[in-house]
Length: 190
Image (cartoon, rainbow, N blue to C red; front, side, top):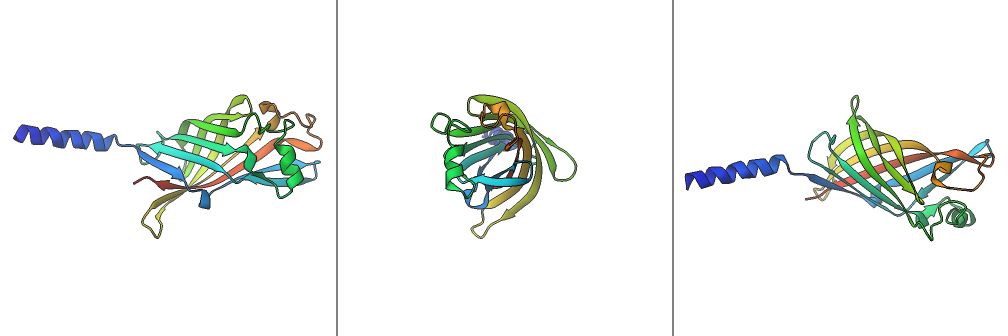
């Protein structure tokens, strides 16, 4: 009986040490934003209102994290309905054929203090490319319901022409480079 007890304790410790923690995005406290230069003189800002994401990690510093994120292209919002409808056409996202953008991480490397470098595969339309995000970890806190939350800001710049976005290939009216900023809050699974 003593051996069985010791075996169960050892198995419990082993399982606990390899337990993975899952975090899911809190859409009420998260934002997916973009900014693009217009005519070389100003910027147009926009966002996507519907998205989903998760982080699964066993290490406390998250360096083994697997991150998946999906954005509903039909939820694009620039504050101008006519422009939003144009962005959904084949000139840009072709939302009818490619309704989502996806990101799947390949690595998360810790830098100094709360800075990380997140690498992964970004798919827009029918093109998947490597992309790197600069990530700042904001920390964790408990909300009023006792849920553990973690906050992050992630930024990158992508060239829209790399993803078969055909409109204005010269970049004279709509710049080629799009700045992407994600302000994300995740909830730890219980």
